[in-house]
Length: 141
Image 1 (cartoon, rainbow, N blue to C red):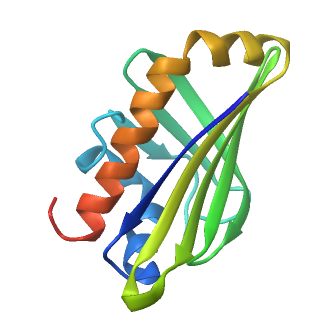
Image 2: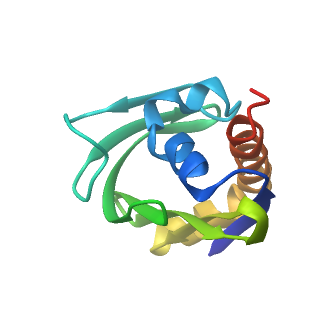
């Protein structure tokens, strides 16, 4: 089961990318994220491990599986019977704007059940995170 949100931001792709890739600062602009801790050193890259804590969701360790600077990154968390894939995509728009798409997919036998159970919560979280990225990138947060 996949859910997504798309929002247009009045900021350059580079500005939005700086907000997005600085994962440890997400709690400053995303009310859905209480803590993000990098589990390794260096810039965010394929193989980077990150622990994310969110209200009403167990702490989750993600591993970056794809990263294209100023364009996208994907990270994946796995557990018994569940695989959570979160995608963060940026698309350049005319006049210096950026389209941001956030997507979460729950797969596996437990993941499908979790996806249905958490559907409304995930919708709220994706919306709040997209709005937070927009506000931070536009200099309003």
